[in-house]
Image 1 (cartoon, rainbow, N blue to C red):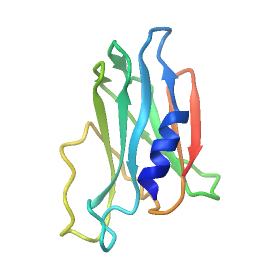
Image 2 (cartoon, rainbow, N blue to C red; image 1 turned 90 degrees about the vertical axis):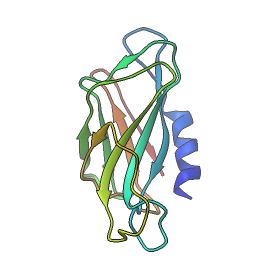
Image 3 (tube, rainbow, N blue to C red; image 1 turned 30 degrees about the vertical axis):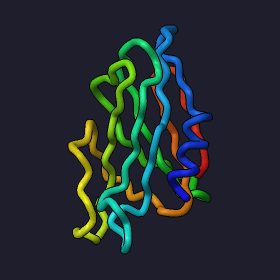
Length: 133
């Protein structure tokens, strides 16, 4: 369910960086990582650059709140996403250590994301866009 919602969310979270044609979207997210039956042991958020130029992520962050919450947890980002590239943000690990580990992430946070519902925000220095999932 969370993966389906992430695709809908990705359609709504398009950012244009600094007036160029670079667009960053949330391409996947996975909450409930490390839960019983989970494929991966970690929660994660994956960004994708749909644009034709690299995007500098200095000053960007991903933020998460529970579906009814008003307190947002934040993971700051650094580095860049190449044109057509992906950026993996690892979040909290669950208890199921038999689940698969993620590939090496580009950023690491400590946010424990729900496997069923929550809110994600992708923010840069100029814009914050949010979506519920």
